[in-house]
Image 1 (cartoon, helix red, strand yellow):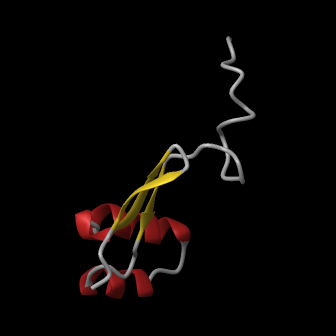
Image 2: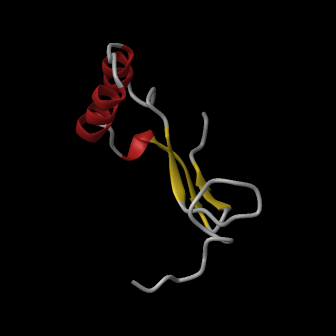
Length: 74
């Protein structure tokens, strides 16, 4: 197996490393918030997000360690 030798740049969330990720707001809609508040396990929370979250649940997107989009907080 070949390695890309990028361990010093990617693979974890830490200062000075690049990162691509999405920040999800589990309280984005009243239905999602109600369901998330009743979840007891991480698995239940993830399932609720998969089934009930939509584009309104995306709070921020990050690429290369830079914020590319932030939802308006009106």
